[in-house]
Length: 418
Image 1: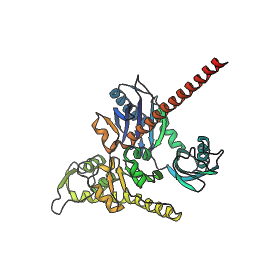
Image 2: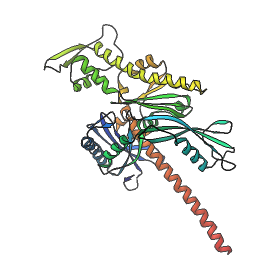
Image 3: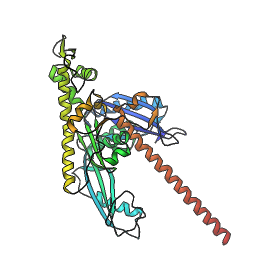
Image 4: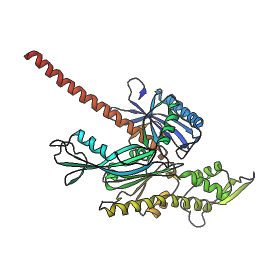
């Protein structure tokens, strides 16, 4: 994946609306990840996952990669790339096959999944992910791994995630112009989920919401499997635009006001302070009450979170009609840069009426303190995908080595006997 002696290195690349991030991780002997390189750059030429200036975004990607290479002391040759835009769709499908022999084989699994994904998807789309949810053999459902089990007929339920072909082509093209290959394109919502959700949360039912600069990615897990995923093409940047419009100040000034004074909960009566800022139409300083700024921010956050809540209710009704279990006992997990706004937990509880957790990525180590921030959930999730690829490669090597040893023993026996 990367040219480096005696080290298993994996690289994640997130090309977001506000920033481009390259993260280099080393997969250690205990299969944990140590962060050894980070490169960031303010985004130009991309908005909500759509490239509008190829040269500009290529320049940002190259700068980000160069910084990460210097810090990690390596040459980056390939990356795991995240993707988030409004052209991402998801759907649940079913594949059913007769079991070829007395028990389920790996080939049976592959055939069932192939049938499940051989369905009509939106025009000009291609499949990004095929994620098995559960298997059923005859009347027994809820099976996670059916290999070796006996039966007559097997069914698999899968979650498909698709995206417009040109969106995928363009973002890969931008990366390859930096002389870097793409190992895999991964939906940002899946990557963030991998970085911040626990196994228990997924089993009990949880909704993960990643609030970025240009988009909100959210995923719903029930009984340990993903059931729904979607991208909402509005996020933190629209909050900044609201501030700019409401108080006639520049976008840059509005972003600073949001970061420095932003909150979704008004202070106690009589404790509100004044905020000084520059008017966009003059060089004069103006003053506003902190309460007014919070009112603008809170109302937009409530609207954004309500879009997700509407989807949750829709899915709940849909699953209820077909008799499927649907409970989010683990509540809502919020992450991404937009989740850092003060008192977001209080605001989210008003919308969802569930337990709320603001999540930072876990299961990583390293001396770069800032990578534990929720800003980096997506790109750290990409490293976990890369780690799994290394684990699978090592597993296959061991299996091949074992088979080679067996064949060698058989061959030696034949030579002795004949």
